[in-house]
Image (cartoon, rainbow, N blue to C red; front, side, top):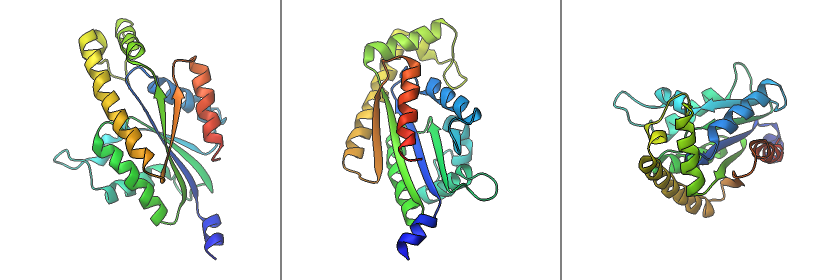
Length: 210
């Protein structure tokens, strides 16, 4: 009975993109969105968390309790009507604090408890400090944007360096947390390689669970 029920339950792969500034998260999010629109990635939903933040904070600006946040995930991941038997949800812009890392672990527990046949992954795009700073400054010089916003750190090397250090410290916490957690899978991808090859590596990883 348990096996039958597990096989009948919706199978969801939730993927959080992570990486230091300049690793290419926004670029890969865009590429993956284009693949979903071209139907080369089936049953995949894309969520830009930076633009969904307003739905996940209360009036005082605090992040909602994990259980309420879990319900937000359910409502965002499922399309109207019944969800496909197998689906993928890719989320960018979520991992911005230590509490977000803890919430990823809690979300994995909640899906398991709710009876979903689910996989929760963090896909980290890896670059070193030199590349991160150069890409941030190149983006600023070109008048580009990150998630639709021109960042002040993209215009100043000292600020770009400080932003890298802040996110690298966060990535270290993330790695150590996931090393001791078997509920969340962690895939690291070398983001120094060409953009199209990074996209291919992510898609190959996604296909393992679809």
